[in-house]
Length: 122
Image 1 (tube, one colour):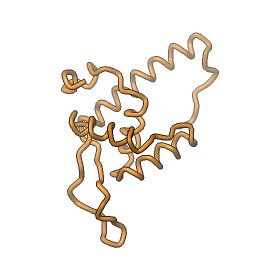
Image 2 (spheres, helix red, strand yellow):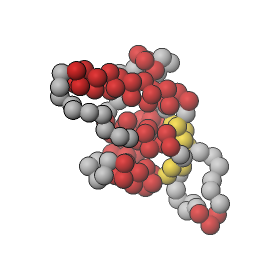
Image 3 (cartoon, rainbow, N blue to C red):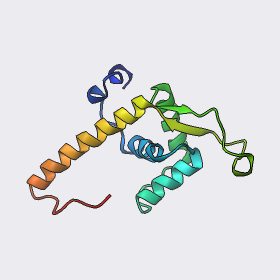
Image 4 (tube, helix red, strand yellow):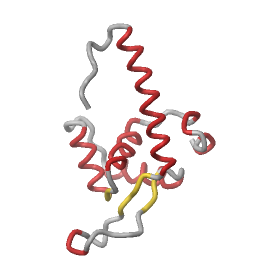
């Protein structure tokens, strides 16, 4: 995946789990457990990432420059020193947007072929 990251449109498709993690971080900076809960909430429980899967994805996204570990921390009362907080990079947002566009194009074809009746609300 690294070769095409300078041009978000030329990257290979993300795995669904990677895309879910980027979507969770597109809203706000989160720690690992909060990412798991956000994915579960946004998918109405249909997607439940294991911690092993999540941290493998985080390692890959960090290496690819799509997310960074945040250096600043929340107020002490809201923080647990064991938590690591992650932030979507500009490049990560661009890759996630390119993936969303790719998926939107596929859904347009599916609608044109009467596989989907109507768009779903976000």
